[in-house]
Amino acid sequence: MDGRLERHYAYLAQLLADGARPAAIVPGVTRHGEDIGRWLASQRRNWDRLNAEQQRRLAELGGKKAPHARKAPAKTTTAGRATRRAAVHADAPATPAEEAPGLAPISASNGCPVPDTAAQRV
Image 1 (cartoon, helix red, strand yellow):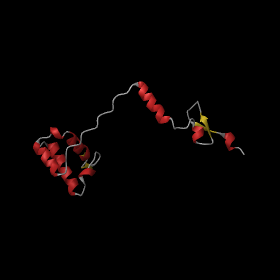
Image 2 (cartoon, helix red, strand yellow):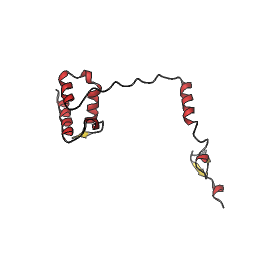
Image 3 (cartoon, one colour):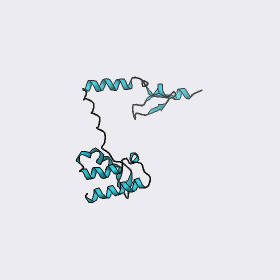
Image 4 (cartoon, helix red, strand yellow):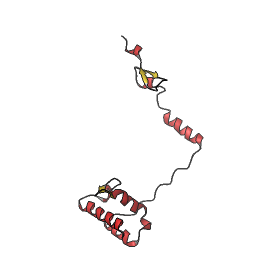
C-alpha cells in the first residue's frame, strides 16, 4: 500500500478501536486532521479499482463495496420544469399578507413586507 492509503487505513483502524461503528464513519469524520469518512466513502465507491489485498484489509475493518448509485432522473423540458414548479407552489398563499396578518403586500422598493398600519390602529 502507498503511504497515504496506509495512513488512512491506520486512522480508520484507530477510530474503530476507539469504539466507532463502520456505519458512523461518514464524510466529515476526521482523525489527526484527515477526513477518514471521505476517504472511506471514496474507497467504497471505487471498490473495483482496489487490488485484492486492499479489499481484504478494508473488509476486515468492516469496509465493503458501496451499493450502486441510483440512476439520475431523465432530463425534462423547460415546460416540464415549469409545470413541476407550479405544482410545488400551488399550495402557497397568494401574498405574504395572507400568510401573516398585519402585513401589507411586499414593498416594490426593497422586496420586504411593510407593516399595515391601518390594521394596528384602534
